Length: 262
Image (tube, rainbow, N blue to C red; front, side, top):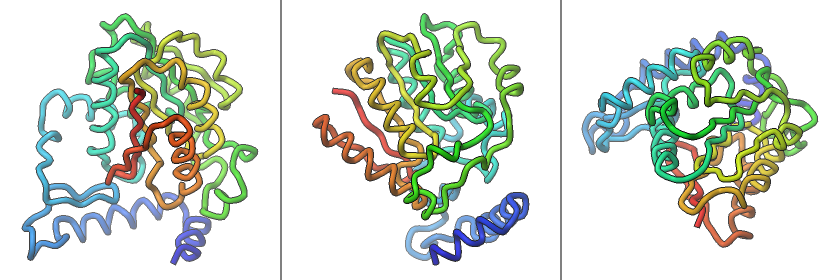
């Protein structure tokens, strides 16, 4: 099945894939184990659950999510629970000393959600947003990742849109270019929140290694791709990264991973 998924990913236009996925989501919504557990309370983004998901209706999160969604970042549909994990980690970081860093921004959905959720404009912190703002770079995709279907590009250029989105926030710094080349431009001496979503192993490990010693105790690293099938090389690399530092990655059913700095 993996080869078929990869083949379809290569030959089926993104616009058609989006329509098919949305149609399947509509057709299958709220039918997971319905006989045993009742109606699903959550069915998005590869995760279906009958557990309590009322965080989606909490006014502060709902407003933050709507702001992020309006950036057009989430092409393939809603991902409330993933955004909630990011906001949870940011809320933790808001109470700690240090700045925020996100590597892998695209159009800024997560970042804008975070800014709204923690009222970042009023915090004495800087939010560094690092991305090429035009997709993945060929030279940073390993042969193993290519075999799993990771491809260069895959995102539309969005730098101008990001500049416009974050122009109201004087404590947001947008850094355009590839990681690891742009990492020295992050001047933060302490980091309270780190989000990594670059879809490739080597840039993410480079960022984690660069920032680890600057992460304050209790700060969270959110690994957006950790549990996704296509990103197995990232999972393996971060499991080893964590082991060497005497910590463990918490695998989440959203497909994310979470590391807390001791």
